[in-house]
Image (cartoon, rainbow, N blue to C red; front, side, top):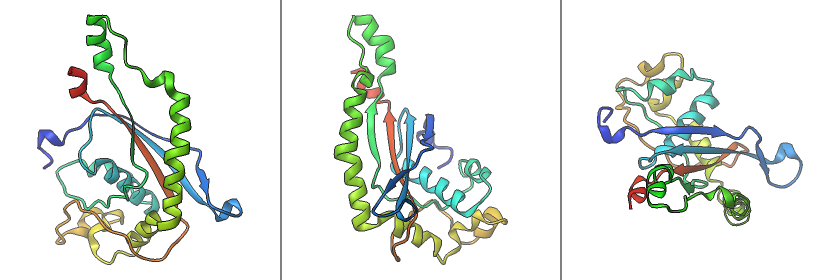
Length: 204
């Protein structure tokens, strides 16, 4: 629930790469646009990032009041579609606490993946991103997801309208997920990754 201490997670940053990645054949206007979202947090709940991205995509695509995002963090319940898991990856663990405390205390080398930045980038591009793009072209997961949300007949997502959450009253708007289905369409896609601070590992 909203008051459950375990539901409180600390997000340090959420950065969107402003330059879209164009994927597909033909002219640029015929290709799919992908945006890279990078989240840095201490820990994440199950489906948390997928729902965060789902809420942002829903609000932006419908031109809704962005303050709805803040309201959804309160006690009122919102149905939030979670985007497909394709593209979600843990980019790297972050060991700031270990580096500042244990490494210094015991004279150990600090754990820093920054020195492998170029190798990490090349590996992601070769082994991860290209596979993600190929799978999306073959299965059209994001295209079907957005098509399904756009044509969803129940009132669960009507909080994006001018009436706000009031438009959803009586439908039991508990946070849920929606599946795919529908025709393929050229939509903006999302490739997202996260930096996680594994505190349990830091203590070990």
